[in-house]
Image: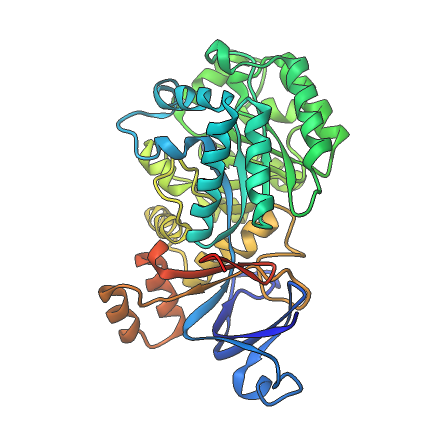
Length: 429
Ligand SMILES: [Zn+2]
């Protein structure tokens, strides 16, 4: 069914190289038909055209933005967000592994998955690349919850056959078999996509990494999703475990895991060779600023990654990350980049949350902007949802200034509705 959405329409047009820019219609209209964006333009023109008799969802005073894209998040860590005082390796042992063990229970998985999907939608996130646990049923649960909302989720079972508690280990063979069964069951069903998910190099034996490489070659249209070069103790551990490899990234590369549709969370402690290889082989980095600050991991250098030609998406990395909100996450990305002397523009912050995430996931022909024919995943944002943000928004004189204040101060309170393929999913219809 066709309808119009009216409001301040803002998105990043497709990059013609160079810096991201904004396309905005202060009083704009978007034509949505059959779950897809058909046209955007000024209200004065479109409301007088052949479209004038269509129903209008009037959000005048609010912004209409493309749905936000989170390129790295752990749904089983929902309950350990904001746990105190550790860096990565201690964090895994003290908080993560005990929490993930509970997902051997299908009811825990289903209840958490439903909450998690609702929380993404409340924060305006319409696509996410998600880790499950080692249990195949954790992936069944997140896919079932996403399918119930027609939400595009890419997810996978964690592969982990060493250096973790026994009740969280698979084997090279069972990990391959379970992942393959999940791919056959879910990949390409509706909007669901599978991600082959070794946790990180230290928790997979060489046999498992080799099996994972075979799986990635057998299913090139699936994602590979893992972590790399997050924390200096982790990097030192990888060096000790794989003494023959030049770098941490090289461990993955040796097994054929650095390829198109590979997404590596963090990428903090990389060198120029690593960055060049990622760019050449089409792999993407997930920039996780709240997590990197919270776990004291380090400062991702966004400008350097872009200069090398890497694809970079933004990510919350809950539970190491401290917020489901991509607005909060973009605000921290700005600060991390400011420490590198490269503060992000408002257009770059929006780009990171939308078009760049879509490109990192090789979905930029379908989501991330309002090009005609794209899927109508969009959000309604009230930039004046609190007394302070209302005051700040009124003081702004340009759309760039309004957007920058929204990203710097905004959170879930500013997201008033989330639409997936043209259907409002939050608040529930
Ligand atoms: Zn992570």
